[in-house]
Amino acid sequence: MKKLVCGVDLGGTKINTGIMDSDGNILYNVKVPTEADKGPQHVINNIKKSIIDSLKNTKLEIDQIAGIGIGAPGPLNADSGVVECPPNLPGWIDIHLVDILKQEFNTEIKLNNDANAAALAEHLFGAGQGIDDMVYVTVSTGIGGGAIIGGKLYNGANSNAAEIGHHSINFDGPRWCNCGNPGCLESYASGTSLVKFAKKYIESGRDTILKNIPMDELKAENIFDAAKSGDELALKLIENEAFYLGVGIVNIMAFYNPKRIIIGGGLSSQWDVLYDKMMKTVKDRALKPNREICDVVKAKLGGDVGLIGAAALVL
Image (cartoon, one colour):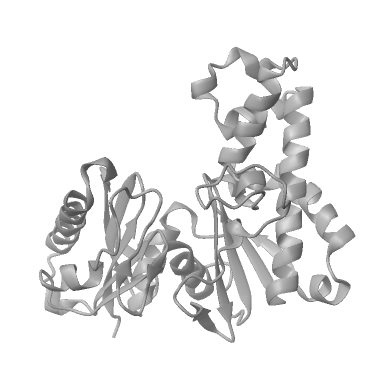
């Protein structure tokens, strides 16, 4: 008999909540604004409403589901159910989210880092099925990651393992990332950093069609579009983006020695543009035994990977 579970993907801008069965099929989901600027209690109320809405629309009572899984931005502690201090959720300092929700919903509730949850989703239902040693990397506004080791989700000592975006690739690099670490991977290879580099070149006077876009409206997708039209600066930016991602992958191969690395997030939609350039760096720099055992593939589950992963925490 299939289990039914509720998943909550808590993001800085939206909350994606739904009911999923144990085969990974989403039976219903609803997306609501997080409204993080209104504080923790308001966001928690939005989470509660989205869970109630999901139950109501699937005609389920709380005792008919196996539990509620929550994927949230870190840092957090999965064992204690506490969201500690996520940069994109203002005012969230040591919020006992699991205990708070248990007062409303009498069921098992599991909390974990959103990237860890996404890694579990790809392992169970996506590009990592049947792979016991794999690393998932999400490349979007920021860079996050999750690791499956020996067939199990690896949390680390306090649920903050696989923070791939925050390892330094240049000790003298920019402090663009909220982590405060100079030259971390997120400061070089995220969608946000791609735009920051573009603005820096434009402000220095580089000729590019990108200067026709208001700077406060410039997005990573504009840079990819400009590169496809042959814009010299955009092509250089994409070349650098692929190089930095390749360096990140090389390090992941050295850290974890996985059999598969799965790339998801918004920038994975540019897979055809990035893959060959990225893998050239991997071929040039990775330890040969680690590189030869590992393939690098695009994620399969798309935009609902966070919801699926959150629900899978209960499974």
